[in-house]
Image (cartoon, rainbow, N blue to C red; front, side, top):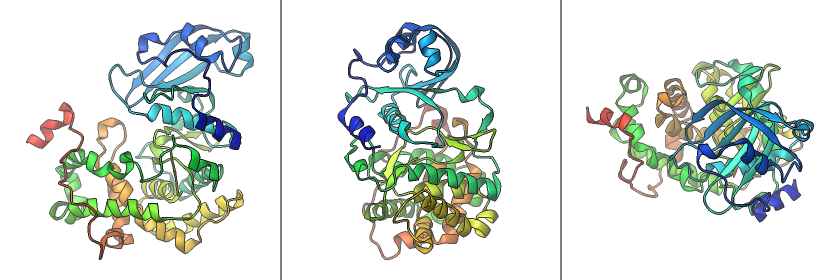
Length: 399
């Protein structure tokens, strides 16, 4: 673990590679992939690369069929793989491709971690954010991708929490994590701390939806500044914590997971990997995956399930049940802002998640817990400086 962390802090994993990783899809060829893989697999040749599917978004998922020479086959690289990077022909994704590549490189040393199999990772480390991961193609694996509308039931959520405990235990309390400048600190980076303000134009679109108007509290319309205040206080609260930290997923809703046929839930899409406390992951997954009634009846017990699994894996300094619950009471705000800024045609349905997180915030008294007696740390004009709406959504605010 320590050697892997020190190597990552030093820069690129394969400094002998010449030039930058490609930015255009036309450059992804069998010859390029051969050159990319050879520093790790000397003598490997990709004899043919056939496109199966290309899915572009914040990143590119390039599903491919490979024909490999004996070296490649002996290395255990399968015929069907998925390449993840950014080849979306103009969409700039910041540093998330490099971040995800670094994460999977780090995770190579984790035994039995609930993650997809990966065969190669690389990144440029030059400030451009380029990174690439070669992993198993889950599109041909036995199992199914998670979705926000899945009903897991209490037992399914318990199993998911145990898988998150396995992930968190892999780096629990590791002092070397603090040396990793590439790994953002939870709630201490602009993507996290300014998330609500950056995405507020999309929140405004959802505030106009009749189905949301029926379930949202009146303060979201009458005093929306309270949302920003609570979000800032959540960030400040997280940064005040002194309990052990670990690598967290950062975006652990069930849509970023895959349920294997044997019942194991593995975790995907690590573009928001962070160093932080586990309660962000736990609250985000658990509150989003349980119905309101299930959460009211079982949340306390499920926190205990998570804690017991984490301790059983050797984690020391884990918060007791009461302290863990107090952490959980504050984290609905994270789910409130992420799902209020979600557009359904991005792939996940937001309404059930919005209902669950706002109901949890009311039951936990999250907003007064965070804001009562505190002066706002800033008084932004909501929507000012926010990410502009794309043309597909702009007309929804003009009606």
